[in-house]
Image (tube, rainbow over all chains, first blue to last red; front, side, top):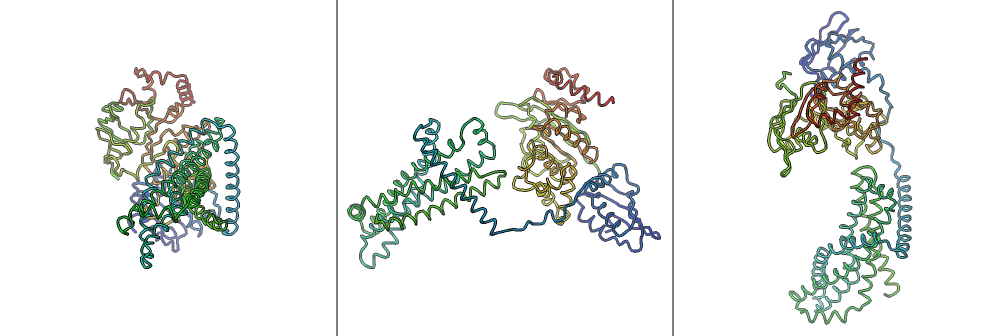
Length: 372
Length: 258
């Protein structure tokens, strides 16, 4: 690597002349050139820089490191012939190095205590969840006693944002689910020549389970994430602190409207979902399976009663509560970084869908036991 | 390296318009090598737009901008390795520690081994007056002054020749602001840096800057501090006639005389 330096030996003195640009862009080559120097029998090293064109902090730093290496093996190093401007960098590096305190292992990865950390996290999450559910329950009761106009307006806005605007997508999804159910059940029932029972299957699964479940999952994806992201951003930009300082309870005007609004919106969405699901089944019945609209409605009247509808609808507020609490809670937990916001938004959606499924299975077992 | 450019920044005939509102009209500006240029101007005078135009973040309606001999085009890579920018509130990546923030440009623009990258980043962090403890922290765990310093370390990571500072002392208490001014002067004296800083802080202006560019009447008036205070423009007279500016000027003169 004669490009950046040339060596000259004189008795015990090793003279190294630096050349060209000792700058950041050439750092790899510079390092290699310095590494290639063999002190051999030399007892002193002299760096001189008559031919130096450019020199920056990075270049000075590798040079300084090398001189420290020489010092370590008891070879004296000297810097000669540096222009004032060049020497400035070197002096600067030496100054910094003098005040540099090196903590060994500072950047080593910290040990992971999976079990302990996991339990601690589970514990704090549980406390947070219980805390926030308790708070919401108390606030809702307070709110019923003396409703604040601010909160009521916000609830209406939330019903619109989470319910009304979700109607089209929820209906499309449920219509398609009705189509799928009709097809799949018809395939099985054909073997017995009992095509008409397709109506029972579609109606029962849509009304009791799938209508509400699909609506809830869609809402978890749409609104659960929106809750977490908007509250999280407000947390990051200190808007929540600003509300608190204004004497408003951020929980009251941000969380309550979302929870209550969604609990009102989701049952209505479920009604739309149910209708769309039935339409999907009826559409396939009429076009493919030879069950005309009249036969479909007639069969529908005998196959389900009002209880089946109520079973589905009764789950909606519970699911809505889970989605809204998870979303807002995760949003309020955001602190610090944009990355945290993304992580907690994901957590909010995944957890609310998980909780919906868990709650649904509890409902199903419970209702089966009491024969509802 | 031979110098193929006379001025570090050369702006000719810059026009910026938003709708019918003209921000800059035929603005011309030269920034000399190794100087510290302060940019001042009232709200809406177009300081930020000027900075964004120079950085290629905003496409001007007309005019040419050359930075370090390279023509700047909107959304196209500029001399990234040769300039550093300190944004107003740091703009450190919030998901990375200070150390990682400073290491990032080094990692992006070189193929140095991890050890070297880390050492270089630490060097820059120490240089701006932060310690190892701060290096391991996330931006939200730092005070405003420390965030600015960390951001400055990132701006200096690639040994830039040109440094932009956007309101470096805004939001800092007077002590931190003075310390930051000293840091800027120190870096300017020790590294071959040209510095362009947008500032509202008259103490910074009088204490640090060699020349001042004042944005008035959609154009720019550049002069040394002694000369610019005599300029007849009403805004300039008002700005430098302000008691705070007068005090800062007196303090600066007193300092020189001592």
